[in-house]
Image 1: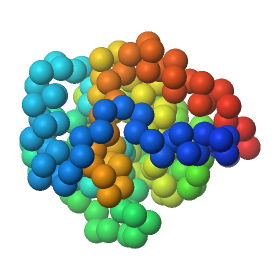
Image 2 (image 1 turned 60 degrees about the vertical axis):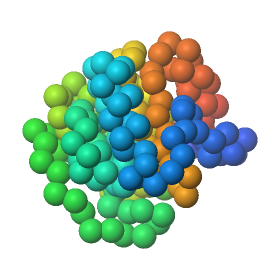
Image 3 (image 1 turned 135 degrees about the vertical axis):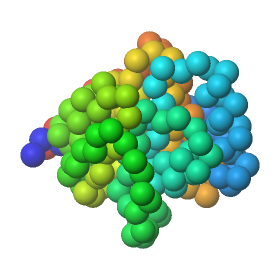
Length: 171
C-alpha cells in the first residue's frame, strides 16, 4: 500500500491551522461556521474528523463529504448515524496519507453527499481534501483543545499545501 509521510520539519507546520481558526467549543463555533457557509456560497464543504462531522450534522449544516475514524483525541467514540448517498471505507494508518485514501477523497468529492470511514487515522486527510476540492470549497477540521479550522480552497492555498506534499516521502 503506497503512502506518503510528512517530512519531520513539516510536522510542526501541520500542527498550526492551515486556514482560519474559529476558537471555542462547538456551541460557539457552529453558528459562525453556519454563517460562513451561507455567505461563501461554497460548492463543496468537507469535514475531517468525528467531532466536526457530528456537530455540523447537529447544526444542520449541509456537508458534501465527511471523513471520520470513530476516534477523538486517540480514544474510540461511538459512531454517529450519518445518512448519506454513498459510504466509502479506506485504510489510512496514523501519520501518513495513503494513496487509497487520497484516491477515495477525489472520488467521493464527485458525489453530492458522501462519507468516508477511515480504518486508522484521518488527521492528515485534510491535505488531499484541500488539494482535490474545487476552488472556493471549504475544508473544516478540529484543532484539538482550540476550536475549528476552516480552509477556503484557492490556487494560493493549494500551492501552499502542495509544497508540503512535495516534501513527503513515499513508502
